[in-house]
Image (cartoon, rainbow, N blue to C red; front, top):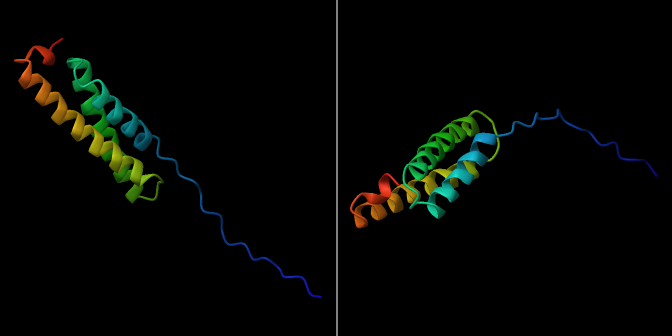
Length: 96
């Protein structure tokens, strides 16, 4: 009985996408803590920026484009929640 030889192709280097993960974490926490004022605004901006860069990195061959997209969506949802709470509280929630 002849043995089958397994032909292995070239190994694709693994390119991580830490910014996608960071964008997702910041996007989720921006929704959870949307009432924290300036801290929330910082989380929202960082979530959108990190996720956008993560999507760009994924187009260049990095992994986790889905996480970056989810982080961008969560950041936008956090921004909307932040604006709704700020409007409902008369602007007090923006600077607490």
